[in-house]
Image (cartoon, rainbow, N blue to C red; front, side, top):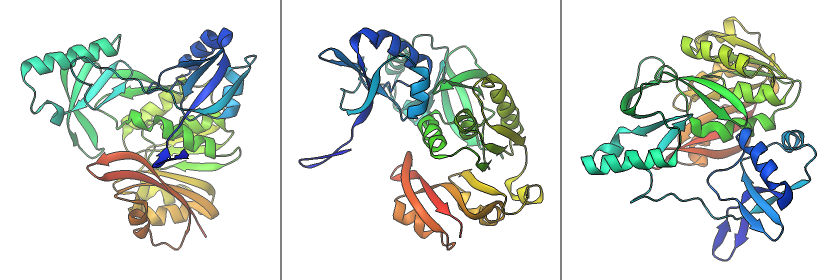
Length: 336
């Protein structure tokens, strides 16, 4: 971010490489899922600027071994796709696209066919388009209706070179959290003892274990999530450095099974209800332990006012849009 006349300019991060190494570098970054597809790759003289997602420099050094490059702020043009009109808001999971039901409310048949055509032209190899109609059940999973293509029940989704099995309609999964998974993993350290309390399919857990020699307890109440975490450990076994223990428990029961004050970090990604588990966090964390709390609200000040535990606040940042003027925030708290 840079101050300019009239406000702030939000900059991307680019890998700057000599044009002779550009094709090889782009191929490596693309295989690892690190290229930021929101921006175009550009040339500047004899150099090529490749926009990348938030990334660990050590990880880049490993995968780009032998290639001389640098990381720099950049302001590349944004990628736009237009066929009649832009794509509606959607989530892409592997070769599947999911749109919200409200997208279709005012569409006639011609507009619907045009939208399907646009998705197919944009995402080569697209297998299915689903409509999310609502969230259902104890595990708050999406109810999906097939709009186009063949029925897909299992899909492999990639983030930063890691692979994740997603059981569509049976687990909660948000592909827009990929950058946050990696960002938090980079903030952890070797040797940490971590509880991922609402782990889902293991997004935070697998990212951390791929970067750090840490001990991670991954828990989720949904048995399909438990199965998915185990499968995702196997899918990424060559990348994993840390040790992972997988549990299938109600978070409220966790203190019965895990010792008091044993852990250095708890990740609580349950935005609509995370603030209700204070006694669980207090039980798990030792003095000076860090809680990464995901919570919905309108502003950082507003969500921090709801957390009156007497713990220190390390920071607050907006992670994702949740609804009209409602956002998901991450508050980093320290016990003690």
